[in-house]
Image (cartoon, rainbow, N blue to C red; front, side):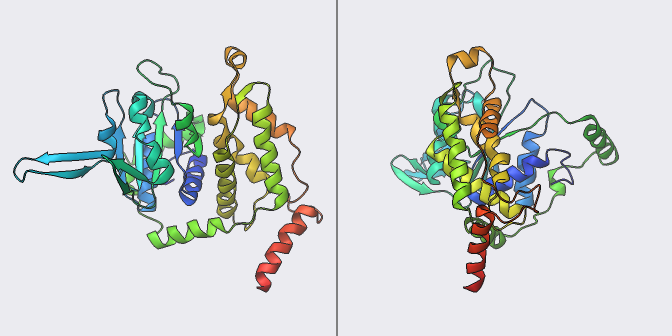
Length: 327
């Protein structure tokens, strides 16, 4: 992807985490920061089928899921499948669609199926929704309801490029004006992708790390600025995401730093702040930072320092990995 994409390496990792764990991604950024390009590049690099819906207020749920169409010549109704029947669905500017149309995605995102006129139809596997939204333009938009936000495993913030990255962007596209997503070839087969998803499920999470993760979730629910904290779905999403991050970084076990690194992207968009906090312009990401700083991690190995002496956490990991090798 970096043959075309400059900066935003975190977006590649977060999209990979979601793909390996069956999650969905919400990307937020001002216009022109390559949100759509990132989704297109990701589909090409993975070799998965990709479709895009440009969300507008007049889009109907049937435009997403499909409907039965009457053919006068045969006198029969035939199912016309909507764009949701794909591997990677880009819902561009999702907050421009009405809540009714946004809700058309809920069943597919949760159960990987859609119901059309009483008939339940399975979606292709893997199935992943990548939605984009613009944080600064509010006119003519509909804020995603809590239930919709909670279906997204990860929210990726796509910022403007730093000057050095933007200079690289200018130089690269000055020398190759036609460079685009079509320049990227698949780097993984369907079998390899399925194998990677299965291996991710086998990543070990020690009890001490699980308890640390639960402490972070509990902190989001009891924070003074939060009316509604992370749900049980958020707990599972964070656990699965940490396993995928561990695998991507070459580890067979989760460490506390995985929880710290993913707390913001997995939890911040799910928080419902109190009225006073919103009036004070409190940022949910700042709340997550407060929680992470206040929760004591288990004593053990971290990605920043692998020279810690043996501890309860590291002994537990070594014990599990050792027993697996013996088996």
